[in-house]
Image (cartoon, rainbow, N blue to C red):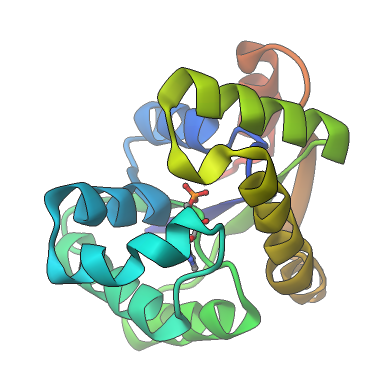
Amino acid sequence: MFNLILFGPPGAGKGTQAVKIAEKFGWKHISTGDILRAEVSQGTPLGLKVKSVMDAGHLVSDDLLIAIMESVFLKNNTIVPGFVLDGFPRTLNQAQELDKMLQRHGHKLGLVLALEVDEVELVSRLIKRSQDQGRKDDTEDVVKNRLVQYHRHTEPLIDYYIDKKLYKKVYGVGTIEDIFDQLCAEIKP
Ligand code: AMP
């Protein structure tokens, strides 16, 4: 089983590229943001709990995210040849728990592939997305907060994965197809 993390700040294009990678390699795309948004829109107890946190652009607690990831992994790990993780892990604690979870099941991470996009471009993409999709967490203040959360909690993972020699990066500005080709060139299952 190949486990790929598609890494990068909000607005880098992880969702778009993760879907394409999952389709090309026959892997399962797991977007923790999509999972949480589905819980919110269905009004489940979990959704009610996380809605205000997400709307403010904060991170949902590690415990909840780790439990979600464990349950999705257990549901799929015997039937899919790989995972593309999009939006997880977002903290050092989540990254360490992911390592332990994979290890418990006899698996490991194959690659952490990062999309690099400069901050000005990210803000303008996220604000445009809020207009196109009506996402509550894409207003200007919330966008800025999501980037603050990224720098504070998620960016430190870059060194964590560089140390493990798992980190590769691709410049995430250009056409979707060009970026996709560059990402695929780094993936050697
Ligand atoms: P995304 O669509 O990946 O940008 O995620 C949308 C929102 O869901 C984030 O701003 C967080 O509030 C929450 N979220 C998604 N994934 C995680 C995670 N791994 N850890 C904490 N919160 C998350």
